[in-house]
Length: 445
Image (cartoon, rainbow, N blue to C red):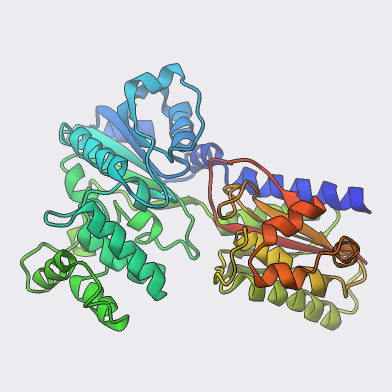
């Protein structure tokens, strides 16, 4: 049974990662029947003579590779901004691009240099040029150019204050967009008079176009007033840098231009397209499960909240399904995707997927024959070298024999150490993509 569980685990993980593969996602997006993304013939008919790419995010390199496989030498050049830790081989095609590995998750001077390099490149474009923007998770940190009067230290302080306050990603981005010359659709203004299309690999639940990488090429619905409302909501008026308070108040008074709104539509702008995300990967995992003889059941593609609570919820949902569906025969694979959070209470080592899996250890021991897995699709769960961990119905008893109490490790947020001692970590290495997290629970008949 252990061998079969491991086989299922490997197949499902691979199916998820294949569906989230940036290069494949780009090539799939240009299928002949997809009229939402312009092909070479259409661009030529519209009078565009030169094609360019600007690729920003954790998947910047493989997304660029996918576009180049499609268009080859027809892409004149561009700027590519990956995460600094991304390992890449120097290839011939890279010689005609400016590649600037940058900082994540906290922006630094490299982030500003990357942003200015993009501005410089775009400044040379004409109405005969067309840009493919390739956007993936991490872009908010990798590229930034603060508005005049706002320093890098100010931006870093704002991010930390908002994170500590418990603000949502929408609220955080609503402020960041108004303090940055790139975010909130401001690259639209920098791209004129060239035309452009944006292809997005989503790392945000629900795929909100204006939130992913802070929507650099997407019209922004938020306002300076929204940004100020967030500051007041979390009583940050006295803790925010004075330059930030001053800039946002000036914006509300009309002294700074608002982020681009939908009313500024232009025929040169092709609507942004999501080419991959968590839902796509869940469907791929579901199909792989069915081909492996499992009955797939997608519980949620919006798994959020505390990781330890989400893990227990998933087990309880599976139990409830099994209690109601008494006539269901065979092995079932319950699937969920999303991005949970961890409230740090101890000084251990771990990540949200590891903590989620640790919370499942005890309730899973009460099931007759079950196997659980939770992993980050980018291969990096928190500050660890693991993507996640797996658990089966015997993990609890095995841990007890080794003197490991899962509740003690959970209390000090030390999930990595727990699973390392059991040799139940999942290591995929950096995958070059990110579409949030995926969990699956296999219950055998």
